[in-house]
Image 1 (cartoon, rainbow, N blue to C red):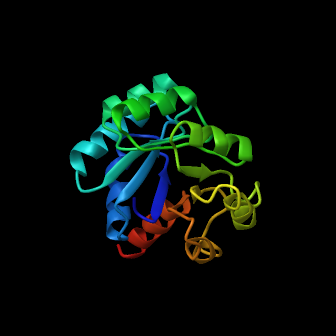
Image 2 (cartoon, one colour):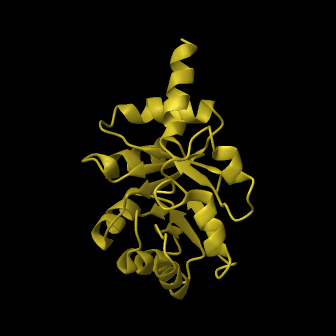
Length: 185
């Protein structure tokens, strides 16, 4: 996994090319396309077909049904705001990486019981950020984190400097990439 995981909300399929091209032009080859919109599965399928050099995943996957739809569309990894045992089992069965949102010791223990060692820490700014993750790493040294929510250019270097950070997620990557692309026109 790349160190940067843009959280991508595609409201209309026509936005897919613009957003993914902007990310690639910014040197980012990963996109977590959220399941918050009606065209999410279609956008994932389109992205997988037209951007084979990118790692395309599905985000905001909250149940087994959405997971099945995301995987059928070609998603190469699954991200959830919380931990779903159903999603974890589907992903394990298909050998697909699953990054559930876990911010408490109990959630991390459940993830470990399911064989998951990298978790999304969301929303990072609400649950104590880097300080909280460092505290959780004490009893769970095998866990790596993907903080999302409240991470931006003002604090990203602080997160990335810690060896327990697998990657950093955020929608700010998309805004930056699009702003840069529009400025070059």
